Image 1 (cartoon, rainbow over the protein chains, first blue to last red):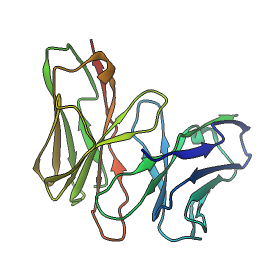
Image 2 (cartoon, one colour):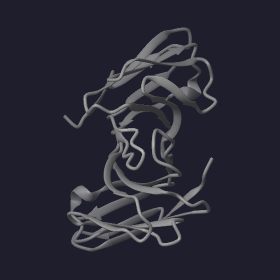
Image 3 (cartoon, each protein chain N blue to C red):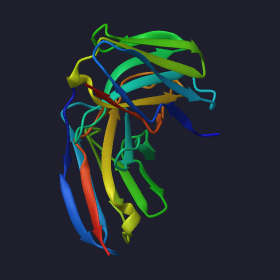
Image 4 (cartoon, each protein chain N blue to C red):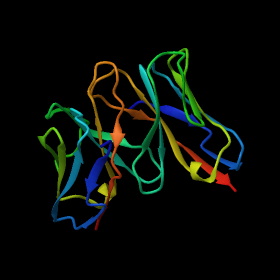
Length: 112
Length: 114
């Protein structure tokens, strides 16, 4: 399968700090998605990106579709305790009913 | 309604049992998916249904049998599973749109095979 590498693998930050994480692939994707997963729950969609260079925000979250189409970035501003969880990037080669290839995940811990 | 529901939440079964996982969505989505997620790993695709027809089978063993009775429902029939099949099974749905294909996930079924 496709290998999407996320970094960092885990982060411990103080409440109020900003967070940055990224995802890189050896393949070009047409779609990048970012999900958050809490323990024992399903992934929740945060942001979807469809164009190279696209910058999209959802509240305190901002994500970018890399120009090379092989990477994507997620930033969280002014973190709060409920931001705790595992963040996954996911790439898709083409639209329609097709596979999402998930990154390895970034585990975020926010210290109050 | 923007929810994908899955039942049961938890399932424990023996290797000789037959059980089924159920998934339902009422968002009018025409694509539905089964993913398997092992602990501390990302989800991995098992099956894709598009317009109620199986379009992708990621070489899943035949002890897993998917079924799509209608556009809102997706089942996964389980028979003669192995302990290593224990995992979180996730259902997802999407529009199957030519340009936009955001997948929405259910809460999952935690399966334990004894």
